[in-house]
Amino acid sequence: MNNGAYEDLLKSLGFNYEEIAALGVIDSFGIIDTMKGEFRWSKFNNTYYKNLLAYGRADKNMELPSDQFLLKKEYKEFINKFAGNQRAFFKVFEEAFLKSTRIGWTKEDLGEVEDYFNTFELRNP
Image (cartoon, rainbow, N blue to C red; front, side, top):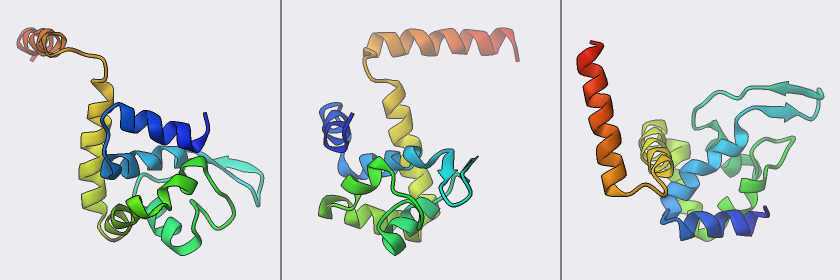
């Protein structure tokens, strides 16, 4: 899927620019170090956004697919916000990620799931 299609898909699913910017960090989980030719897990923090501002990409040695569309003017405010405030990034990421897990679920479905887990908690404190 190309970058435009990925962005369009997220918009069609009801994500706003701030949520899309927060979810963009997912591309940076576990990356290949092109200089050393090795795989490494990246730390989950706001470094991705700091690098976007500093290098115009995820890392000084590499560019990820999300880098291209997140540099558009619609995302600039949120990239700056997340680069400067890790807690704000965590909050928006959490909400957007939870929203992504509920795509396709009806309100009734969510109620049934909640009832199930409430019952489970009562049986297994």
